[in-house]
Image (tube, rainbow, N blue to C red; front, side, top):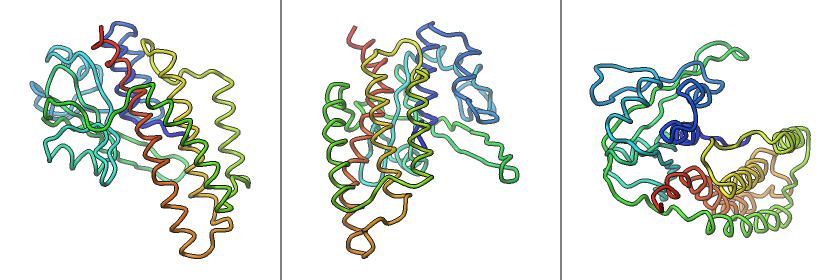
Length: 260
């Protein structure tokens, strides 16, 4: 249930590889994670889809020096800079990666195959031209951390007021998984990221978890349609803050390098 977008993994470990902090094998293994395979289609100089190792090397040769994340939602083009075709594809996928140093963006297409319990996931990253301009609505790490602290308080108040309790077996399992991950100290980001980014990412995932539990754990006391609508309306800005913080965390390595 913890929100770890594929674009975040690609950007984080791609940035570590571009900075010379990890090997190509380590980067690709971390990006693919539990998926079966990732391919990159539409890369300049390639006639067809290629593997991640070749794609990352080709991108470096094309001048790519870093990777940023975009997590857009309807009415909120978070991390995007255009053109409209790329923005539309990214919005449909709800995520994308934007290259720094070359006018390229990557949008994932996810394909699942196989029976329940044995589903194989393959990902094709489609390369599209992007506009070289500042990304939309991305906060600094400091801004994101302050916004998250307030959002966490607001989410708690909202869920209590609407009688949406984070309880039951599904909620408990999710919370237990979150605590186990935090206690195990699993590397949330790739090498080269500041400690503050790791902290912001973990807090953003916690806020996202609370919102997910609120939506997925039944209706609580919000039985009436008006109350359900009120819950969605109250949680929408909290979701927005969490997404902004995720983007700020994943993009922080590039931002720090650009500041020198």
